[in-house]
Image (cartoon, rainbow, N blue to C red; front, side, top):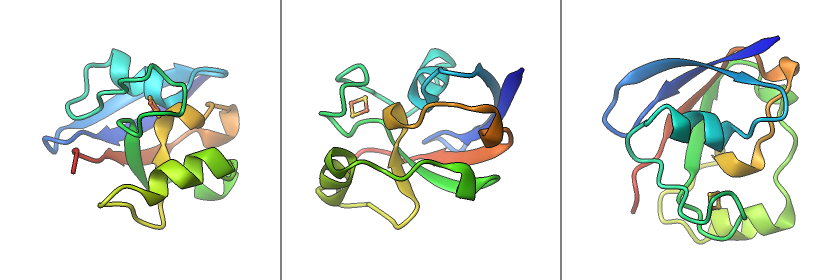
Length: 106
Ligand code: FES
């Protein structure tokens, strides 16, 4: 089953994407070429350049951020209560319909 995602990139472009279970949210956004998602560490939870804000959909189905993710998010100047590092969000069917906005650097 594909998992449908609505992504607003850093330029404001809306992308309708599909991922599969086990993909990371980051990899789907990055592979679509969305503006603003650098993902410089490749998903190792060490760069925080995959920052997104969850804006809608099945928010309650997200697994909570780990302590490492929380530490990295806490160092960002533009963090919000709905911020996540997208490489730390594995896709599952329960996340079908998730909406996120890619946060520009800084
Ligand atoms: S890609 Fe580096 S922390 Fe997510």
